Image (tube, rainbow, N blue to C red):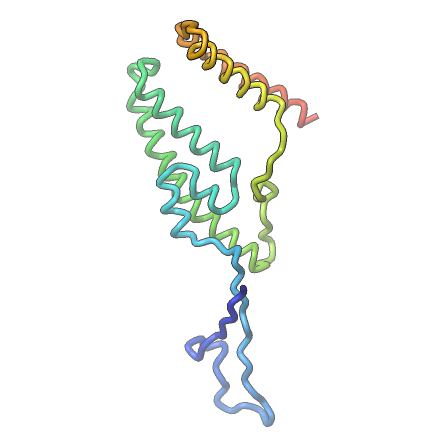
Length: 186
């Protein structure tokens, strides 16, 4: 249900002029509050959990990417893989986390401006509703991960090999993204 708000006399542009012309009446413009509007402060607050503010505004891909980046940085800092580079990764983690919060607030404000029809501002294509779409790669990856976990719990196979070969997963994902990016440019 839409609320109708009228601009009050505190807005100087909408006040009755000192000497109104004959027959002039003041009808303040009605503004309909769009239920799709987002609160920038709430988006910033939700982004304390990285990516959640972007998801609130409708930038699902960006939200998930932000969450993955923060999780990856925390994982790297907790492992021995970046021995000696902890300060670099720690500063980048802090920077990215703050960027994530500010980005969510700014995106909420721009989203509202686009809803208001401000010239030159349009909603990006990646803003949409969550839908159930198929993904062959994602489906195969989930089946593979489920089969590996099931082999351990159901049949008692050791998962020690996962510790040695887990880097193949991000390498494969990187190759896929690289090939897809090159093909999209053509």
